[in-house]
Amino acid sequence: MNQKIILVTGASDGIGKETAKTLASQGHTVILHGRNKQKTEAVFNEIRRETGNQNVSMLIADFLSLAEVRRFAMQIRQQFDHLDVLINNAGAQFTERRETTNKGYEKTMTINVFVPLLLTTLLLDVLKKSPSARVVTVSSASHAMSGKPFLDDIELKQNYTMSRAYALSKLYVIWMMRHFVKEMQQAGVRSITFNSVHPASAPTSLGREATKSLKWRIIYFLWKPIMISVAKGASSSIRAAVAPELEGVTGKYFGPKGEEKVNEKYYSVENEEIVWKYCQEVIRPYLG
Ligand SMILES: NC(=O)c1ccc[n+]([C@@H]2O[C@H](COP(=O)([O-])OP(=O)(O)OC[C@H]3O[C@@H](n4cnc5c(N)ncnc54)[C@H](OP(=O)(O)O)[C@@H]3O)[C@@H](O)[C@H]2O)c1
Image (cartoon, rainbow, N blue to C red; front, side, top):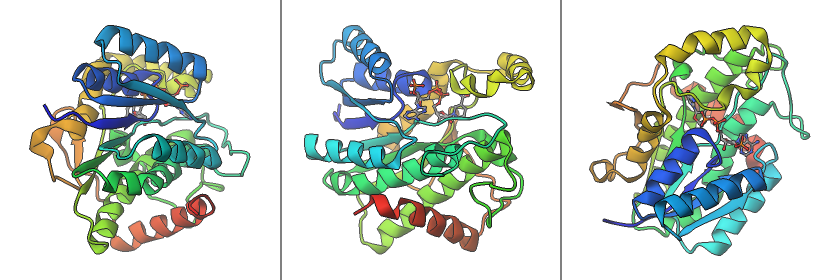
């Protein structure tokens, strides 16, 4: 089997942890990202112990800070001469009250859109050094329930609700990954693929903030019977990361049962361009 160097963000819990553990058990070199050192170290030890794979390492960064994302990317660039797979898995939902980072960015858009875009951009150099690299970004089936995007209010200053922010962030990140395909084609780079995935609905800690409210505790409780296992949920990311039959496949969207259609109701080249330009303005200070 072709062993790869794979970075999994948000590998300290849920789908990211399951993804990292399976890829480590397949013999790949796996870099675990987490934000909490103690929690990530426990996962790091568990994966090494259970898989017997010693080519597992860990790095810490809080993705609510774009400066930390930059520092984290620089560490990867220093420690690894190339990267075969980047799995943008870290993601979050917040509460019904709009929250911002200490730089004033809306938190859901930050973790679910700005960070994958910034991290992918900062790691392009090491991805280009792989003969065949893959960027896999974890979106959500809920992108289809976003409702109409507010393209003059991307960070939802006037129009925030928790579910709208989450669903729109997962729609925008699919658009951003497809935009990367065009950017790379224009730059003549054919060795990197960009696909988005969704894990269906799996019982993880994703609702930890939302379920502080009774309304969302009830919604999560009612949702439980239709959830699939975390392992099944992670299968979308794992397949997109390493399946030989997906070699060279780019710009697609996969779920646990295979390729799916993105909801294109609100898609247009112009809308994608608006979001891309907005995000570029946000990440620009962290690129150079
Ligand atoms: N579970 C589902 O049903 C479902 C459905 C659709 C899409 N998704 C997507 O799947 C991905 C994984 O989510 P999950 O369900 O596995 O949730 P999870 O159990 O909450 O795991 C999320 C991971 O992201 C990390 N993370 C959260 N905030 C972070 C921050 N500020 N900085 C750095 N890392 C941070 C978490 O770290 P800690 O361990 O420190 O919290 C954890 O490792 C997300 O992109 C999510 O949107 C999940």
